[in-house]
Length: 293
Image 1 (cartoon, rainbow, N blue to C red):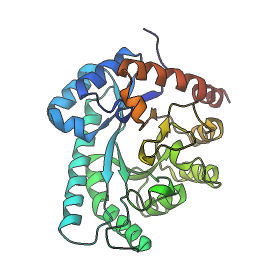
Image 2: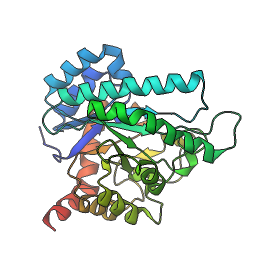
Image 3: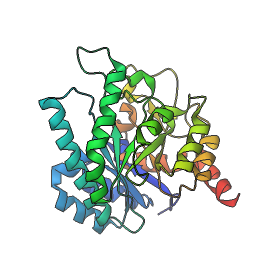
């Protein structure tokens, strides 16, 4: 077995159709030391069972995807979303406690899009701030970091009204950094001319909770949700962002999170191998250079 970069974490979305047991087995078997989980496979086996499986795997836990989707106006839909986030916080704490030493109690938050029938983007973003105010005490009690993930602007209508790292940091600003942080995902922020200063800002504020990498390749898939590629297969220069992330003092795992129908149709063992190889070529040299520097 070839050992992968010790900081590489396999986000479970990259092997989407693998159940939890298989995901843990092939991640560890592929020489990786960490995994980022998704809630649905955890629910399939139950939280207690999932925690035991994770503990038995010997893998670190790098994050749980996902919470958020809190842009609906006050009412039954919003209350249900807030309650679901409370459950996600509990799940994150349980899984982080079960993971190997170095696990991170990070819950990734995707804000949610503009509510149906509305065109008020600003109000939707304001409701994200309101949700954070409601959820932050819950997260603090559980020892969990709510990590706001800005998504590329093409997803603003239906998935995330938070489109830049600067917006995410502004939303996080009222809260203790250990409770509300941000995610840097190369796919979503590589285009932003302000991304490097905002990564530095995240470092100054102590809010960088997770770093995720995958590549952008044109033309995009017909379903733009499935447009991500292995690191090194597209146009993203991982060097500046990776060095900027490490310059903040971030020492956590680096997740590869890929949504791509062709990747999902590939043998999952091969996906793990190709992920590790792409990471080693496109990302690891910058991790090493930053560590030396």
